[in-house]
View (tube, rainbow, N blue to C red):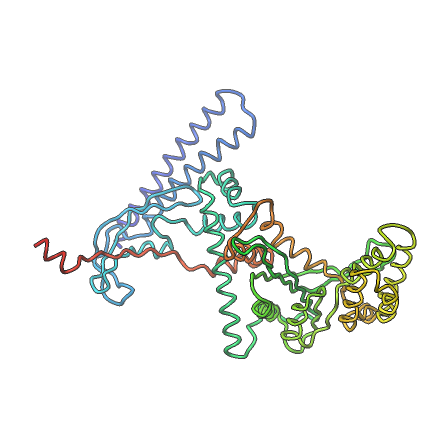
Length: 463
């Protein structure tokens, strides 16, 4: 580009913006002195005017990224030369509102496609959303109570009006991309028989916990969204007088999938590998009594210490106590405390023997006997305490609420399967502090124009 032309264009932009800002400053000055106004009204007026100024500035700034005069031809993606066709306007919706950019469009006779090089440079698609607006929409769509609320918040914060389906599309498109990315990592690991690369150095001890939560899915009813959490712990002084220290989960990262246990297990394993887990790592798996959890643990974390969550184990005691003694009364409490003390001391066999005396009392007692018998090897709580291990599943219970229940299980919500998984996965990446990584995975938007060529019969008819 001729340097003189470039300087002239830049100076014209600066002069136009300077004049516009001068007019804006004078208008605001006169407006604020016309009558007494509260600060909130001043804020709203300034934000609105700055938003309009930003739109004008961005509209004037974008042409400076292109040559002042279109070049005769450019290299097409097919490798041939594409010739200048015409100047064509494109409308883009951005965080500063809708704007129109006129840019050069080139046509390639070899592949019969037209394209605008500036669109590729700016990473835009005519008629689409800017990457910045798409990001904000996906963020709001995943975090607000509904897609309608997401666009309402967007309008309030950014003064941009869009329909709820725009928020849905942005969120679900991002989620689908992240699902595909996870599937590719797992497929590559399965093919190479090598674990995925670690994003950090191996921690001295890693916890892996998993559970499922039901979401209402169109046509199929309620289906289980499986959630997983990989985390470490940190000891801190306890607020309870009976405890000197307590273990708190830190550095949590999450996985969510509307998938069978085998597929989910591979995804959770891949996330653990990303966190630095290897075959010789100190891994602790905490879960409730669901068989699929321990199958995943046996398959992907065979070296792990498996722990049945203390609170689920306790719940079976109380259910049995209620079946034996009724809902209330001191006898029920004393009996339950005796069994809980025995479980705390690792005497699971004693609890089973005592329960056997009351097997005739109903299903709750039989369930407790079966539960403790099946998971006895995972209930050595004294040994776990000696090693300083966490024995509660509060972390994964919280994950289920954060990833699924808080967004997908609000009143009246029914999802299609892909949408439910996509939203849960976006929330998982967000709450794993991987948002910027997710943004870097997005491909640039692309819109290709293909010239319609008439069939030979039609051409013959015209002639």
